[in-house]
Image 1: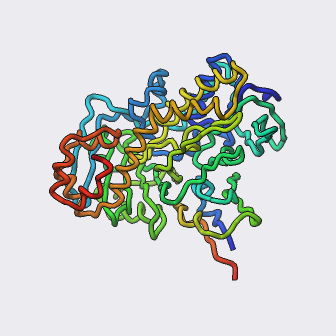
Image 2: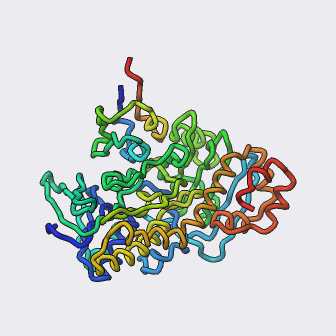
Image 3: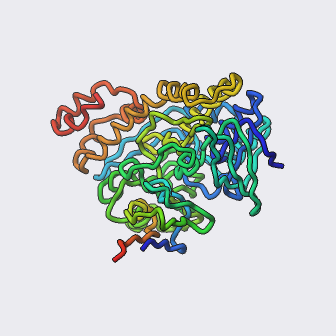
Length: 395
Length: 59
């Protein structure tokens, strides 16, 4: 049962919360991992693509029931239909089953010694002398006060807990994408091992549509767009209707939506007795919107910092800010570059994109999405001085 | 006036994430709006992936 006193309370049992809780428990701390929903992992708000570079998860030995499809690359389609095929070796990642994966990750937290409880909502954050000292949790309609030395907000894009604890994490409209997705059966999938991405202003204003295979005829079919005239759902349905070659026999087995932080990284993610991780701290790759890798790598960093802080009996913002420093060194600076890349892509016209797709290689695209420099990019952009100007931050 | 169409709403929380006033909270039926905090700015309506929210400045 949920007790009244913990070293750390982690709010939210997505990948970020579960991995953080697991590492904290492994450090010997008494941890409660609380999830608002009655079922961890559902409903998903995710395309479920997971690169093998997400080593915090992959190294845990994820069982096969969490993986629906092995992926070896991607196909990107320009507005004019021209394509780049990105080959990424034998195995580049998975399309996961979040309902299974998230539960399994929470189980690992439980097995490491954390106490996990679903259908438990944290509704209030208590503070004394500027320090977080506990929370109010509600389970089965019963309120319970819980004392803690440290509160971790892993409560997703809404970030309600982080904000109640005093961190300003509201996302500006410029830094959030609207996501909408159907999981469909009967999809004509070109290559089961490739993610397919479709670009174009009409199709998906400042974003793209995707097909992420989950077997031979099942896929997550989705869209992520920046602020547009119409809602994300409208553009996805229009696209599906325009592609009978892919979707003629497709039907809908699940409907998902969500807001995706795509930038606006936080210089400070901590307070006295408090820290945020994952979507709640905007830790998402701004170009592809993937968050599992970021949330879990940050979770490991955070757990180590928190364990040390609690051992030294000092959970002040100053001490916890080591997490800021280490995260920015490990991930933030790279993601900032990727954010510039997104801002560059946001400004491209369909013609610009057609030109780039005919000039760039799959390998170039991959490097860009990972925040690495692309040799020869300047030369390609030189063909179009406007692009060179737009891309000055990338070179 | 702030309204959510609970038939359309998928309870994803995108609206909560962008609310500059912490006026929205998500419960099992969707976002709840705290009228005392809400300034009817309409940002939640703009981000909603399924057009479930409608905000109109009060006359």
